[in-house]
Length: 141
Length: 141
DNA sequence: CTCATTTGTATCAGAAGAAGTTACAGACAG
DNA sequence: CTGTCTGTAACTTCTTCTGATACAAATGAG
Image (cartoon, rainbow over all chains, first blue to last red; front, top):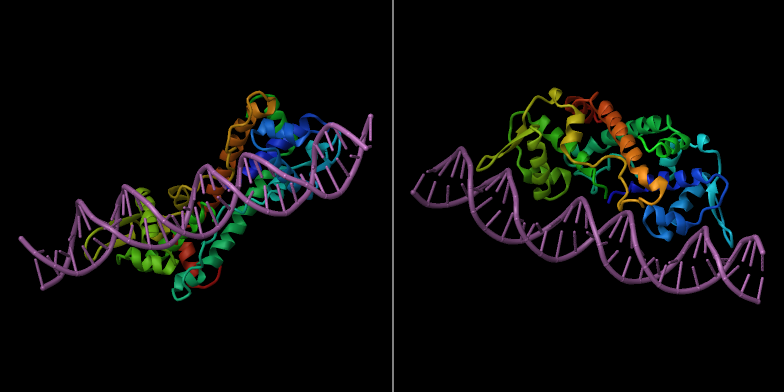
């Protein structure tokens, strides 16, 4: 299970919130649709809240709703909100510094990583939550 | 430790092989530079061999060398050779089919995933192993 | 032919990280 | 005040990657 199923969950949850515009949705209800635990959802919502994508409310009749209109939320914002740690993971353990390749490879790779991440965000920024929501509603990708 | 440190290791190892053109390198030696275990390297080389990027030889004086010139190996080939399972992981457990969003979200997400992967591969295909090798040699990314 | 070397795999133990669970304090509507 | 929710902490699985040991098969050297 990769670290970035977070992104999938986030888009799922946000689509649900987009669907019920101004109504507060409860973590329990969301968890049911995503087929996971309510606490997992709350942890995720915490990240989305931190990124100012959603607003939560405690207490009776509490729950969560979008902080903005769905067409003002780009997928790249969602991607950045959940920390899904890049495409290319650098070496787990640092390579040998005694080797001419090992000494420099990390710098080259992290440069490449930045460029790829930039590309992903550029691509994701073309879609809004509204777009996704509409695709889901039409039952067609 | 993400699944795609495989890609980093692969680029590292292939750079080493590019460096010592026609000489067979042993998994033990490579493991030392990458700072990992020889078996891990052999597992990785197995994938690269399967993708026709390297050629291995058993027995005394055995080892591994590139199957092609470094300027004929693009990074996107390396990316595809190691199975680093895409940027967006789909839901771990399938979402609820009773929910209008849960029912369709996976199709939309996997469509998005394909598009992003295509973008990554397009970006990676601009670089060859030769390019990386040169950057490493110059000690500059 | 025999032997030392090296890959290719299988298998298992350990580490790390994510997900699921339980529990409870704090906020808030009625 | 009471019942309902969120936010968070703490703990237990579960899964996946890595590391390690072992050994058969290949192969070059003597």
